[in-house]
Amino acid sequence: MIIAANLKTNLTRKETKQYIQELDTYVKNNAISQEVLVFPAMSSLDENDSSVIVGAQNAYPTKDGAFTGEIGTVHLDEFGINTILIGHSERRHILGETQELLIKKFNYYKDLGFKIVYCIGEPLSKREAGESEMMEYISTQYEGIDTNYENLIVAYEPLWAIGTGITPTLEDIESIHKELKKKSPAPLLYGGSVKVTNAKDVLAIDNVDGILVGSAALYAEHFCSMIGFAEELS
Ligand code: PEP
Image (cartoon, rainbow, N blue to C red; front, side, top):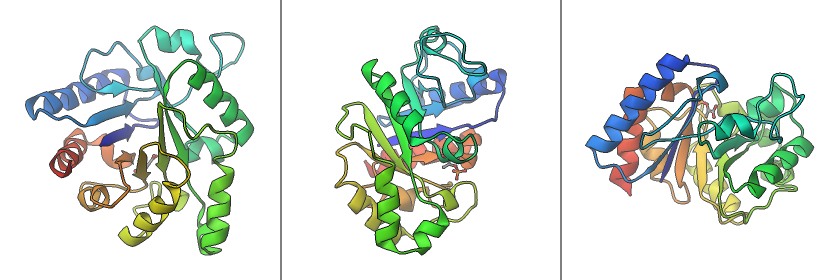
Protein backbone atom coordinates (compact mmCIF):
# COMPACT_ATOMS: atom_id res chain seq x y z
CA MET A 1 0.00 0.00 0.00
CA ILE A 2 0.96 3.63 -0.38
CA ILE A 3 0.66 5.93 2.60
CA ALA A 4 1.23 9.57 1.75
CA ALA A 5 1.40 12.73 3.86
CA ASN A 6 0.66 16.13 2.36
CA LEU A 7 2.15 18.60 4.84
CA LYS A 8 0.77 21.57 2.86
CA THR A 9 2.00 24.94 4.21
CA ASN A 10 3.04 23.49 7.56
CA LEU A 11 6.23 22.53 9.38
CA THR A 12 9.50 24.42 9.02
CA ARG A 13 12.62 22.81 7.55
CA LYS A 14 13.79 21.86 11.06
CA GLU A 15 10.40 20.43 12.03
CA THR A 16 10.14 18.54 8.74
CA LYS A 17 13.56 16.99 9.28
CA GLN A 18 12.51 15.80 12.72
CA TYR A 19 9.17 14.56 11.33
CA ILE A 20 10.87 12.49 8.63
CA GLN A 21 13.31 11.11 11.19
CA GLU A 22 10.38 9.95 13.35
CA LEU A 23 8.75 8.22 10.39
CA ASP A 24 12.04 6.65 9.35
CA THR A 25 12.57 5.24 12.85
CA TYR A 26 9.04 3.83 12.90
CA VAL A 27 9.38 2.28 9.44
CA LYS A 28 12.73 0.68 10.31
CA ASN A 29 11.79 -0.50 13.81
CA ASN A 30 8.60 -2.10 12.56
CA ALA A 31 10.04 -3.55 9.33
CA ILE A 32 7.35 -1.73 7.34
CA SER A 33 7.16 -2.80 3.72
CA GLN A 34 4.60 -0.20 2.62
CA GLU A 35 5.55 2.78 0.47
CA VAL A 36 5.62 5.92 2.60
CA LEU A 37 5.58 9.29 0.81
CA VAL A 38 5.91 12.74 2.35
CA PHE A 39 5.24 16.02 0.56
CA PRO A 40 6.80 18.84 2.64
CA ALA A 41 6.46 22.56 2.04
CA MET A 42 8.76 23.75 -0.74
CA SER A 43 11.25 25.49 1.59
CA SER A 44 11.53 22.31 3.66
CA LEU A 45 12.85 20.17 0.79
CA ASP A 46 16.25 18.88 1.81
CA GLU A 47 18.73 16.01 1.59
CA ASN A 48 16.99 12.75 2.40
CA ASP A 49 18.60 9.42 3.13
CA SER A 50 15.63 7.96 5.03
CA SER A 51 13.33 5.08 4.15
CA VAL A 52 10.61 7.62 3.37
CA ILE A 53 10.18 8.99 -0.17
CA VAL A 54 10.10 12.78 -0.22
CA GLY A 55 8.19 14.47 -3.02
CA ALA A 56 7.39 18.02 -4.10
CA GLN A 57 3.91 19.46 -3.54
CA ASN A 58 4.44 21.51 -6.69
CA ALA A 59 7.02 22.51 -9.28
CA TYR A 60 6.80 24.35 -12.56
CA PRO A 61 7.32 22.41 -15.79
CA THR A 62 10.80 23.81 -16.31
CA LYS A 63 14.42 23.18 -15.47
CA ASP A 64 14.87 26.80 -14.34
CA GLY A 65 14.08 30.27 -15.70
CA ALA A 66 11.89 33.32 -15.10
CA PHE A 67 8.90 31.93 -13.21
CA THR A 68 8.77 33.98 -10.03
CA GLY A 69 7.67 32.04 -7.00
CA GLU A 70 8.08 28.66 -8.67
CA ILE A 71 10.78 26.01 -8.56
CA GLY A 72 12.07 23.82 -11.38
CA THR A 73 13.93 20.57 -11.74
CA VAL A 74 17.31 22.04 -10.81
CA HIS A 75 15.87 22.60 -7.34
CA LEU A 76 14.43 19.09 -7.17
CA ASP A 77 17.58 17.48 -8.58
CA GLU A 78 19.64 19.15 -5.87
CA PHE A 79 17.92 16.86 -3.37
CA GLY A 80 17.36 13.86 -5.64
CA ILE A 81 13.59 14.41 -5.65
CA ASN A 82 11.73 12.55 -8.38
CA THR A 83 8.21 12.43 -6.97
CA ILE A 84 5.60 15.15 -7.44
CA LEU A 85 2.01 15.90 -6.51
CA ILE A 86 -0.03 17.29 -9.42
CA GLY A 87 -3.64 18.47 -9.48
CA HIS A 88 -4.26 18.85 -5.76
CA SER A 89 -7.61 20.58 -5.27
CA GLU A 90 -6.02 23.45 -3.36
CA ARG A 91 -3.84 24.18 -6.39
CA ARG A 92 -6.77 23.76 -8.77
CA HIS A 93 -9.23 25.85 -6.80
CA ILE A 94 -7.23 28.27 -4.62
CA LEU A 95 -4.25 28.83 -6.93
CA GLY A 96 -6.36 28.56 -10.08
CA GLU A 97 -4.37 25.87 -11.90
CA THR A 98 -6.20 24.86 -15.06
CA GLN A 99 -6.40 21.40 -16.57
CA GLU A 100 -4.25 22.78 -19.39
CA LEU A 101 -1.43 23.67 -16.98
CA LEU A 102 -1.80 20.36 -15.17
CA ILE A 103 -1.44 18.49 -18.46
CA LYS A 104 1.72 20.48 -19.20
CA LYS A 105 3.14 19.65 -15.77
CA PHE A 106 2.09 16.03 -16.05
CA ASN A 107 3.73 15.54 -19.43
CA TYR A 108 6.88 17.37 -18.38
CA TYR A 109 7.39 15.29 -15.24
CA LYS A 110 6.27 12.09 -16.97
CA ASP A 111 8.96 12.59 -19.63
CA LEU A 112 11.48 12.82 -16.79
CA GLY A 113 10.17 9.57 -15.30
CA PHE A 114 8.89 11.14 -12.09
CA LYS A 115 6.52 9.29 -9.80
CA ILE A 116 3.37 11.39 -10.13
CA VAL A 117 0.57 11.48 -7.56
CA TYR A 118 -2.28 12.95 -9.61
CA CYS A 119 -5.28 14.21 -7.63
CA ILE A 120 -8.87 14.24 -8.78
CA GLY A 121 -12.14 14.88 -6.98
CA GLU A 122 -15.48 16.63 -7.19
CA PRO A 123 -16.94 19.63 -5.33
CA LEU A 124 -20.07 19.10 -3.25
CA SER A 125 -22.36 20.57 -5.93
CA LYS A 126 -21.29 17.86 -8.38
CA ARG A 127 -21.73 15.10 -5.83
CA GLU A 128 -25.21 16.40 -5.04
CA ALA A 129 -26.05 16.58 -8.74
CA GLY A 130 -26.03 12.78 -8.89
CA GLU A 131 -23.68 10.02 -9.94
CA SER A 132 -23.61 10.64 -13.66
CA GLU A 133 -22.88 14.39 -13.39
CA MET A 134 -20.29 13.69 -10.73
CA MET A 135 -18.52 11.06 -12.87
CA GLU A 136 -18.67 13.35 -15.89
CA TYR A 137 -16.95 16.08 -13.86
CA ILE A 138 -14.27 13.69 -12.63
CA SER A 139 -13.74 12.44 -16.19
CA THR A 140 -12.73 15.96 -17.25
CA GLN A 141 -9.88 15.76 -14.75
CA TYR A 142 -8.49 12.75 -16.61
CA GLU A 143 -8.47 14.66 -19.91
CA GLY A 144 -4.98 14.83 -21.41
CA ILE A 145 -3.53 12.61 -18.69
CA ASP A 146 -1.78 9.36 -19.63
CA THR A 147 -3.68 7.05 -17.30
CA ASN A 148 -1.40 4.15 -18.24
CA TYR A 149 1.79 5.95 -17.19
CA GLU A 150 3.79 3.38 -15.24
CA ASN A 151 4.80 5.77 -12.44
CA LEU A 152 1.34 7.18 -11.93
CA ILE A 153 -0.55 7.06 -8.64
CA VAL A 154 -4.07 8.52 -8.65
CA ALA A 155 -5.52 10.08 -5.49
CA TYR A 156 -9.30 10.46 -5.30
CA GLU A 157 -9.99 13.38 -2.97
CA PRO A 158 -13.53 14.78 -2.89
CA LEU A 159 -13.13 18.52 -2.34
CA TRP A 160 -15.80 18.70 0.29
CA ALA A 161 -13.95 16.11 2.39
CA ILE A 162 -10.58 17.86 2.38
CA GLY A 163 -9.80 19.43 5.73
CA THR A 164 -13.46 19.37 6.77
CA GLY A 165 -13.57 16.31 9.00
CA ILE A 166 -16.36 14.97 6.77
CA THR A 167 -15.78 11.84 4.68
CA PRO A 168 -17.95 9.94 2.22
CA THR A 169 -19.38 6.73 3.65
CA LEU A 170 -17.23 3.62 3.28
CA GLU A 171 -19.81 2.36 0.77
CA ASP A 172 -19.49 5.55 -1.28
CA ILE A 173 -15.71 5.29 -1.33
CA GLU A 174 -15.98 1.65 -2.38
CA SER A 175 -18.38 2.42 -5.19
CA ILE A 176 -16.47 5.37 -6.63
CA HIS A 177 -13.12 3.58 -6.40
CA LYS A 178 -14.65 0.68 -8.31
CA GLU A 179 -15.62 3.10 -11.09
CA LEU A 180 -12.31 4.94 -11.06
CA LYS A 181 -10.36 1.70 -11.30
CA LYS A 182 -11.93 1.25 -14.74
CA LYS A 183 -10.25 4.48 -15.87
CA SER A 184 -6.67 3.65 -14.93
CA PRO A 185 -4.62 0.66 -13.76
CA ALA A 186 -2.62 2.98 -11.47
CA PRO A 187 -2.74 2.51 -7.69
CA LEU A 188 -5.69 4.51 -6.35
CA LEU A 189 -5.45 6.36 -3.04
CA TYR A 190 -8.30 7.87 -1.08
CA GLY A 191 -7.81 11.29 0.52
CA GLY A 192 -10.07 13.64 2.47
CA SER A 193 -10.26 13.79 6.27
CA VAL A 194 -8.54 10.48 6.81
CA LYS A 195 -7.46 10.28 10.44
CA VAL A 196 -6.22 7.72 12.87
CA THR A 197 -9.80 6.79 13.83
CA ASN A 198 -11.01 5.97 10.29
CA ALA A 199 -7.81 5.06 8.42
CA LYS A 200 -8.07 1.34 9.08
CA ASP A 201 -11.62 1.14 7.74
CA VAL A 202 -10.72 3.18 4.66
CA LEU A 203 -7.61 1.11 3.95
CA ALA A 204 -9.67 -2.09 4.17
CA ILE A 205 -12.01 -1.03 1.33
CA ASP A 206 -11.70 -2.88 -1.99
CA ASN A 207 -9.76 -0.91 -4.60
CA VAL A 208 -8.26 1.44 -2.04
CA ASP A 209 -4.52 1.04 -2.55
CA GLY A 210 -3.53 3.59 0.06
CA ILE A 211 -4.32 6.98 1.53
CA LEU A 212 -3.27 10.60 1.08
CA VAL A 213 -3.47 12.35 4.43
CA GLY A 214 -3.34 16.10 5.11
CA SER A 215 -4.11 17.57 8.55
CA ALA A 216 -3.96 14.31 10.49
CA ALA A 217 -0.53 13.50 9.05
CA LEU A 218 0.95 16.50 10.84
CA TYR A 219 1.08 14.37 13.97
CA ALA A 220 3.93 11.94 13.26
CA GLU A 221 2.58 9.52 15.85
CA HIS A 222 -0.86 9.39 14.17
CA PHE A 223 0.63 9.07 10.71
CA CYS A 224 2.86 6.21 11.95
CA SER A 225 -0.24 4.44 13.30
CA MET A 226 -1.82 4.71 9.84
CA ILE A 227 1.33 3.23 8.29
CA GLY A 228 1.01 0.43 10.84
CA PHE A 229 -2.62 -0.24 9.85
CA ALA A 230 -1.58 -0.54 6.20
CA GLU A 231 1.14 -3.00 7.15
CA GLU A 232 -1.36 -5.10 9.15
CA LEU A 233 -3.82 -5.17 6.26
CA SER A 234 -1.28 -6.02 3.56
C1 PEP B 1 -5.12 16.67 1.37
O1 PEP B 1 -4.85 17.86 1.45
O2 PEP B 1 -4.65 16.01 0.42
C2 PEP B 1 -5.98 16.07 2.37
C3 PEP B 1 -6.43 14.87 2.17
O3 PEP B 1 -6.25 16.84 3.47
P1 PEP B 1 -7.06 16.38 4.81
O4 PEP B 1 -6.54 15.01 5.18
O5 PEP B 1 -6.71 17.41 5.80
O6 PEP B 1 -8.49 16.33 4.45
